[in-house]
Image (cartoon, rainbow, N blue to C red; front, side, top):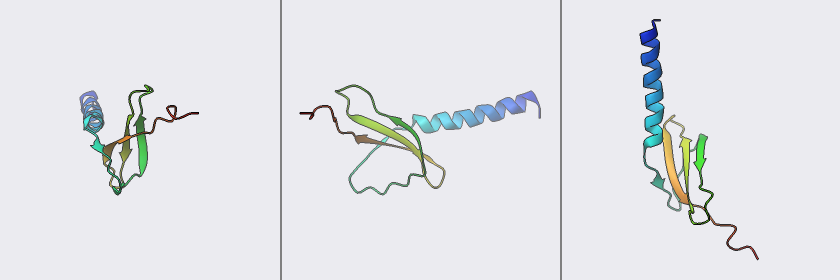
Length: 79
């Protein structure tokens, strides 16, 4: 394999995975049927004000999906 072919394959592979992470997250609604085979990333800001988390996962068909959900602020109700 030539260097240019190896570079082209690496570029296409990397570009495809970056495009999957660039897609917007679907808001979660109660009762949604989630098909999660592998969790790839969980983006949950550490800020007290931000309570939206984004879960990036791979479904059973191998597609990368994103879903956003409201995470509870557990520090707000400590007595």
